[in-house]
Image (cartoon, rainbow, N blue to C red):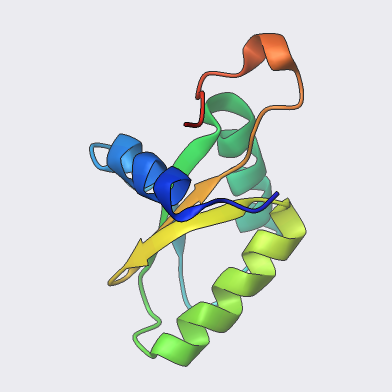
Length: 100
């Protein structure tokens, strides 16, 4: 699923008040981290992840690309060390977020 610019902006606005639901540390995208992200996306469709130990922009981008691929999520945006992920719920009745 590809997001338009307006949809990404809308999702970033919804995520503004959220605290990071997962922290990416030294070990990167571990199976435990990916399971945590899967659980959070299944429950809320939208979450923030924070990069704690990775300060290099290229390293963060590579890790984020891997996380997005493995979780089948969409990247709504990244500001500094915090990224916003979105994945629409599979069941139409359980979807909480209606994209513009």
